[in-house]
Image (tube, rainbow, N blue to C red):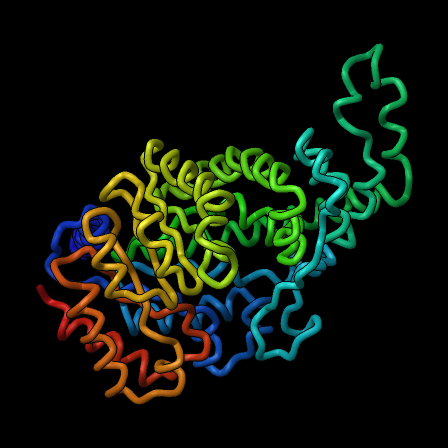
Length: 416
């Protein structure tokens, strides 16, 4: 039995590898993100899932075993967050029971968490800026970090050390240090359940979709530091600063992916794409501000033996001719709303594609409509291989019967 499951695991890994390498596998693989659907389907609230890892475990495994997809998504790193967010008094999210009803998934709080005049501080020393300015703004319990000394001033016994640790005696800094210890314990709990889920899945012959996450440097700058409005204005008012910040973030984003992959033993790197889409910037701006550092990031990951897996969250049909410029057979692009016929036509010799069965159909349509959409995707995007069946986004709001129809239709119709 163990040998059979080990062989199943190898077959599923090879299935993904064949798709990425643009070979025609024996069938169209199906891989989805269930999101909080398992919790909701099993009669619990999203708040319960975010705070009770054992309840999350029970609901997730019920769905994992029932649908038995070709690669599963580990649910813990992005969903068992409640206790950690509480300890940090986290300000960049609202989540169930903390600003939102118990059945509503967490929501990002848009804002300018780095002022325009702080570019120079960030460019001079990103770590110092993030520790002493950025983290205290997004984590209320880490306010004391503002009083930390600049560690560049703690050089040796004659320069910095004699008086440099005085701030660590203040009540605010002591409270921050205690909060960091508590946060560390919660991070260990997340890591423990993440590792346990991956190991259990492997024993059952199920690989995990990705083992690390990173972002396009432009997205990191816009999502978390300058905010959407701030970065839009920066492209006109201070374009050189934007480009310099993206270059400064590039090695940080690369290192984050490599460390995550080494820790998990999984070479697939998830990269959510937010602001490089048709509706946010022109194609000229995309070529200038967004694509260069994203391309450099993906090429560096490929050179390191990793597989970039960007998720283009929105429509990027006008970008297809640009984003095909990466080493062929080394990455997989997931699309939410991009024209999949054009994506197949333009990317067929370069990049495997994934998605984009509309969530609207899975949430409000009929099983027959789902089956028709599955067949249409396989006939177009899936022609001659290089395609993974997936929904346009997470299945939190999908109807059970429609998810079942998606899996059944893919397995019935997706044989090459």
